[in-house]
Image 1 (cartoon, rainbow, N blue to C red):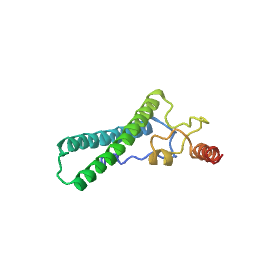
Image 2: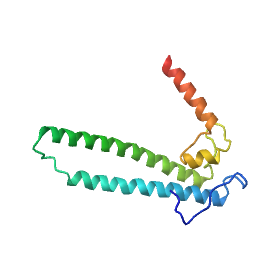
Image 3: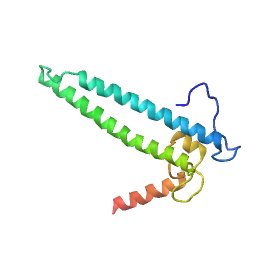
Image 4: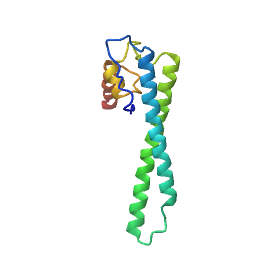
Length: 137
C-alpha cells in the first residue's frame, strides 16, 4: 500500500514509533482507506447500473445473490474503515503501536502486516484462547 516512491521501511534499529515510522503507518493506513473507498464507489455505481429486470428467474436469483455477497463484503470494509480511522486517531494521540492490554510496543512486523492491530501478538493469542474457552463452555 505504500507507494513505490517511498522505499522506507520501519526498522527495529531505530527508536520505536519515531516520526518517520508514524508517517509511514499514517500513509499506509490512509492509502488503504482510500483504496477501500474507491472500491466502494465503484460497487455503488455497479449496483445502480445493473438491471433488476432480468427476464430469467435463475439469472435474477444469481444476480441478487452476487449483490448480497458484495454488500456483505462492503459492510466488512466499512467496519475496517472504522478500525483504520481509530488507528489514525491513535497516531495523532501518540498511542499508536502500543498494546491496549499491556502498554508494551506491538512488533513492527505485526503492525506492517496488520496496521490496525491494537494488541501485541501475545495479548492477541491470550484473548483468542480465552474466547475459545468461553465458547466451549
